[in-house]
Image (cartoon, rainbow, N blue to C red; front, side, top):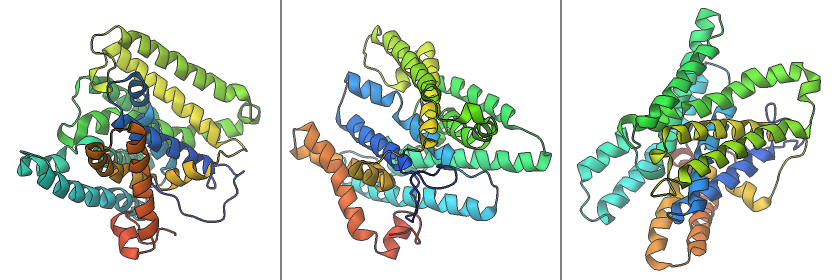
Length: 340
């Protein structure tokens, strides 16, 4: 979850050109849903959360990727994704090695590198998604032709094939390859569809229907998926156990939701709630380190609300205390120059 640079930003400016607080608002909501999804178990709310929260995060990731192939930008993105991933992986490796009964240390080490467990898959797969897009940009510059339709077809095919790939396998293939479609959709919306919409001014003007249509499609697809899955033994399910029709509905629902949220970014009214936006601004730290707080809290607390609250507040508080130190910004955030 890439972090923003603080600065003087006009809330009423398009998110494409300048920072929009709606980005932090959406990321804040999604991070809260991530924590809730990890705390509550085998429930319909968890099923609903898992139906859209991480694909939408990937859509946002793609939306924020620049359409450029400079080596400097590649290095910057690598640092912002891989350094926090490596630091958190080392932290969890030590924690799980010492406090997980019967753990095979060598197997755990191999999984941290080749198939990151639990929530650690996100930055790992996100880096590969960026590399795929970076390679496509380079290829387009070399061929001087539009290759994005072909890339989109490949991404759709990978998503379909990923239905039969188990999670937490080599290179986290299910999300690294299958979920690439959502990251690509965010990138193509910003750099291909949005400029085309702006050229057609009447179509781009703020109109409730422009958001209502994709949101209605999202509700239709997600409801159809729910109806389909609710008849299956073992419901509520997660994406790993969706049937093939349900998996396709899962993909369509998240593409529609991504379009709805992207249209929110282009509106003149930014969404802003102090606590929610603060969580969104620090989404990387909360995402990576809420899990350790959660694993400790469940040993001593019975109330799910208290566990959720602590899993969010403790990483936020520690980040607020430590981000003034350059070493912390470099090692934990992947950017020593990250603004205070």
